[in-house]
Image (cartoon, rainbow, N blue to C red; front, side, top):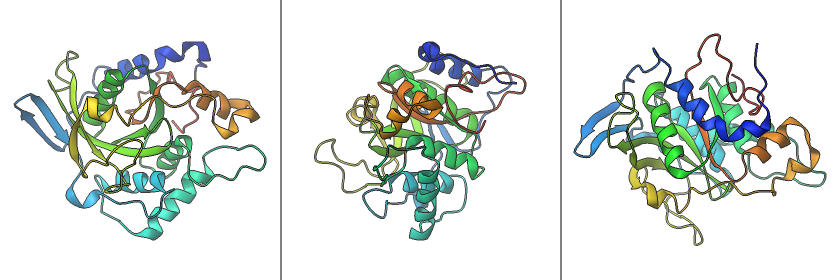
Length: 266
């Protein structure tokens, strides 16, 4: 059974997800390139061959999905696979208004596509501020051994977060702060004249630097919003928040706080 969570409780979603991830018995160290650093703790799940550049200027979601599948798996950097992933994400992206033809794919399709491929479970989470988003992402990476998707440029672009540098191991203490995010931008090396340069693949950038491009999702511009329904409620509820495509560890018999709010297969 899934408990329905009303939209007015959206500000609690990120905190509830974090609390669920931190439930006793779930904090199992992942088998990854983790090491203590001079500043605390460092973890990067990605390898050199995992990066994939997007094949055109609209396939950032397909390329990000491709990289997320590469991490922890066998590397596939082919254009055919990226196109297949892009088409899948687009097909799961929800309705659009009459006359609007989607060229890219939505964050909803990104999350749902990973789940359909068996790479999850993933869910969408909207964090209230940047530090909270980074703490949730780091903890999730640490306990699941899977990368996190970041909705960039107010909702217009996709990056992958494969690791982090923090003041402490997130499963050792709740008193940690993420200092740097290890990211992969499928648009590298082109970047954006408006948003800034693309970091090198697997570059550890400061949270402040990340925050120049990882900003809250824009409000009131989603093409499907006019259609109403659960999909519109979901995307509108994420407006104005830092949006993560977040892996998690399912907890038996514990209702997911986002079951009503976020349409992903959990």
